[in-house]
Length: 367
Length: 127
Image (tube, rainbow over the protein chains, first blue to last red):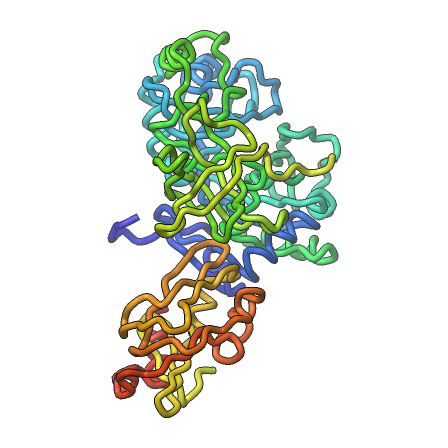
């Protein structure tokens, strides 16, 4: 982001600095990219537990008698079908079918939906939803009311359970409950962006620092590590979770991004539906595919992909995979050439390097 | 932290000049900024490199960065241990994890580079 505006900060900014985090400009936010090291933090989440400050994420609330109608008009998944206390992954689309953002939709009550949206998109998302509101519903920009902590890893539940009377084992995956963490009101969601078991808690910003420290103390016996955006990226990539600006953006539809499962064409009209129907009728032209590098090198975001000596696509995300000890990535390829097991070439700093397309996700946790 | 007998660049490389031989590496600050290093690409022996030109690259989990040659010369040795142990650049960037040795074509070039004290002040100001 090139801007003279001061970077935005979360309530935990000084905590990150005191922990010696390396800070980076992440879409205009001053965020920790790593503390002890990306690989170390990544492994903590896969093997035990890690704590992330994700307070930069935005929150938008939709309430009113027709909240469900508005939620269903602006999102691709079927919001009205959610039960109270249930959440799902969804998309906000432009009329042409490209992504405004990818979001989590939580149904708090019949007349209340709670959306967790990407930091860099939150104002745009809010304006987009407002512009489509022709219902008896109010849209509220609620980001200032929440800090968000993600506790992720096989020991996440044991860590967080020490701090809350809520029975975490009773919260099913992609469900949430409003309760207390360490005496503070908290929305406790069994969600995450790591491919590992875990929770995301939404808490008052004024309590964020105390809760951060209490979670670290509660997880100390498990070797909990504070984790930055670097590990968050390698973890989500192994689990093949999309990142806005990489796998998805305004020019990519959910069908192309292998996110057809969040598109419910039969639920009724929604913004972008007509474009997706057309795209289905005409056939898709490209597909998102996973790859592993065969040669030496890492196919990184934006690198060109070649097939038979000609440019054919591009890498959306690429990184060493600390769990698999391979270099992995995702790329767009012409749909007729997106089969698994195909050899492709990725231009790594002007040198073609062989890679092979593989099944995704790269990593799936044992249940 | 920063050896007194090395000279330093604004791009965070160091050079140790001994006679007409220059040993080149990246600084501790550079490895800190890069994080976990996974690949090091070095030039072949015999390659002539001009001061300020890329001599190769260092790649970490999160990014790949060019390494610029602090002085001009011809490569006489590339540190072969880095191919198998790139992570040694994180632990010993000023010692065992040197990158290349050069036969210097203009040994006086090093004199215009920063001293250890100047470099420490430079990275202090950068933060």
